[in-house]
Amino acid sequence: QQPVQSPQAVILREGEDAVINCSSSKALYSVHWYRQKHGEAPVFLMILLKGGEQMRHEKISASFNEKKQQSSLYLTASQLSYSGTYFCGTEASDKIIFGKGTRLHILP
Amino acid sequence: DSGVTQTPKHLITATGQRVTLRCSPRSGDLSVYWYQQSLDQGLQFLIQYYNGEERAKGNILERFSAQQFPDLHSELNLSSLELGDSALYFCASSGGDNSYEQYFGPGTRLTVT
Image: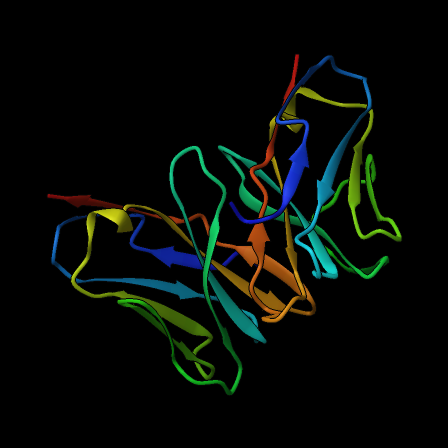
């Protein structure tokens, strides 16, 4: 089952915060987060493992609620470089399934 | 530069044909993953190999096959190509110092005409 990401798109001004959510109907082993800029390959941001701690990558952090099978990506004090499409990938039964992505556009 | 290389960068071929995409993982990485990205389907996991053995399978069509060789490079073979197979094909590798992090190659853009 493909995880559901919300919102589909976000427009922010530089310095504002954003939250991107990812939810699954399946019991998950882990959640992966990637960012992809237009015309480029996805770049790994972080992975959250079942029973693991909240992760951070620069000013981006994420959490994983195992009971609800949900993960949230928090972008603090967004920078222009944060623009792109954010994908969550949920891992269950050794397979990773990606959400449709959340497009994030940061305005100066 | 992620350290993962993919060839060719672009491939244009006709329906019914067969193509081979090649991926060289980062030095020291044992796992190779293949993904397909198209506009309407998003990013789809196809298959994973670990040290030469198939580890996990995603939504890979029977017309597609892959293998990982002793030197750890991998090939994705696509046969009886259809228009709908047009997409970006990414390979990623992991299994070095931080075994969970996947490093993506630049991708191969396949166009089937």
